[in-house]
Length: 302
Image (tube, rainbow, N blue to C red; front, side, top):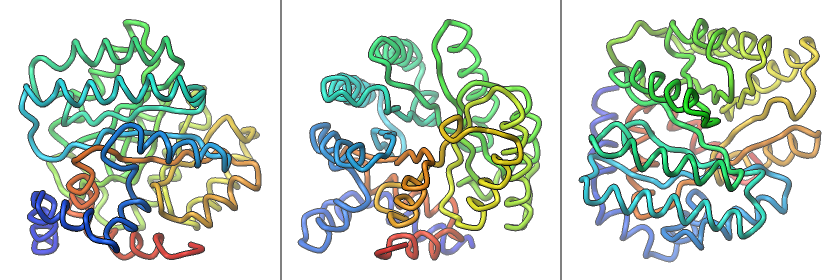
């Protein structure tokens, strides 16, 4: 879907459109449903409401496109404020911050601030999850996570079932792992081409994680996959709470509640910051086939 992808890429880059949507009455309601707001205090308020409903929290300072070195300090400062605010609100133990590798690896001076952020988060008992970027960053991301873990930081990593290599990675990487289908539908690495193949790979990867001491986070809104995963976890005698499900803020809220009510751990991913619009729309640009399921999951009761 090159045409659809190009359209969403252009929309994602349109900051004026994002500001217009956020400023309109209907747009404000939409923003409140899918993003935590532009300021740290806004996202902490959203996180508190989710925590009160029994959810776990994942916060990502949204960035889109290339970020100048001068601007990267602002992003790290927002992350640091978020960690402090989570601790002050007694939300640290149920929270993580999610950091995109495209941002961290996008400039030569960002590794040291990332280490500082990991140190602050570890002291505050907030987890850190490193995302997964396009194919040319996969090895660099895994090396980054391996290096941080070697330094004593308990850092999680995101793996994509769309890549054929991921099942093997799941067998060996350990620690906290967020498993996604994969937002990047094209690239240089060997990947599965059909949706059913990606789903089957997801289950194989999940089994590989569950058979090890890894702490998996299954990021999916697919009810069918979730049902299969619940069967697999039961057969492998994994207790609820030794794994979790992860979903986007404002999506599949009915499903989130049903899982929480059944005793499952559910983590909700909340983007915040001025780049929220480009981040959300950019994700659809990477995987336009997910547009219909994404819209469906926003419907009341989904």
